[in-house]
Image (cartoon, rainbow, N blue to C red; front, side, top):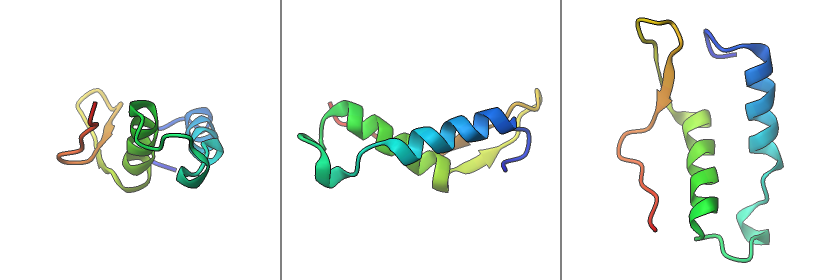
Length: 68
């Protein structure tokens, strides 16, 4: 579990990311909503964790884009 994240948050994110359809089953995998979900998955799985002064923290990926 990522430091500072509640178990409920961890379960919610894991559920969200594991229940989204695979790109092969999508009608239009380039639709902006799928791009957003894929970006959130990449950030969650491979993003750099940043701890801030409030202790909340964030995850980020440098240069990520969604093409509209």
